[in-house]
Length: 186
Image 1 (cartoon, rainbow, N blue to C red):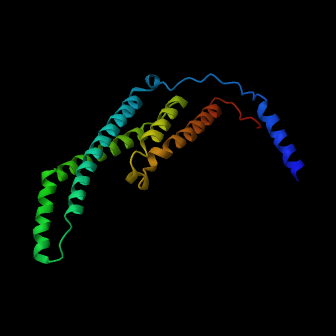
Image 2: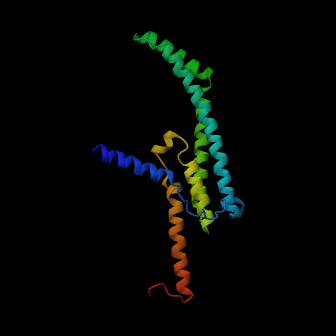
């Protein structure tokens, strides 16, 4: 038993000691947003801007709501109905002091703008693989921006780049048939 373990250790050590040859690295170009069509570039930049504004508004609202929750923890509601009504008025007064409702409205507007920018980018049809890559990067970067959005994920942004590739292949096949070329194996 010890001989087997010992020989396995020697064999693994000899494998680790050998240098591993890496596969040749293909020359890849970075994504070129400037090479994309203006409507795709504008939609991407609008999504990036809306994402930043939403993150900022979400953070401001979260801070304000934490203040209200902290106040509520420090001042628990009483059980008597009359005292509860008085406590509720104080709670509402504190929420007004920290501007909770305007911050919530600003966050909801920023969220709506963000969703509209996602849909606008999703509706721009990619014309080449670089544009599909740009849309894919946007989906990966901006789709799961916030935990509450992960539950209600907009499938248009996530699945659209996959559909773009299928549509590009179908269009290429149609063009080759129209040009009189046969598919391989026909």
